[in-house]
Length: 42
Image 1: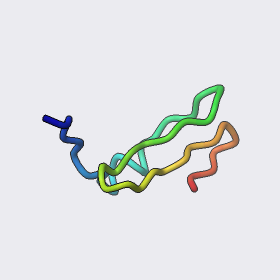
Image 2: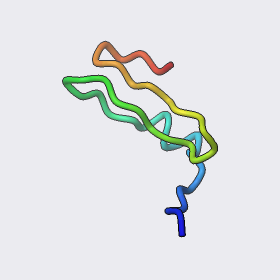
Image 3: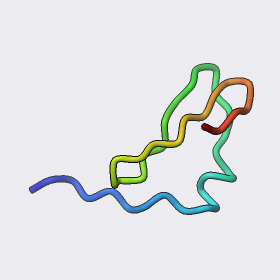
Image 4: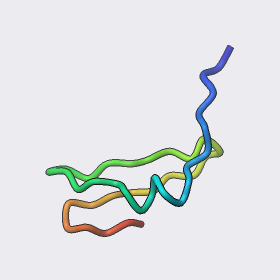
């Protein structure tokens, strides 16, 4: 049984913290939000 990932909410995207390396927040439907060290959200 695959792991169920809850959809990414607007609040989670706005509150994403900056880290030393870029990282992704998954939406669970194949979409990702890339958070960059400079503060970009792509």
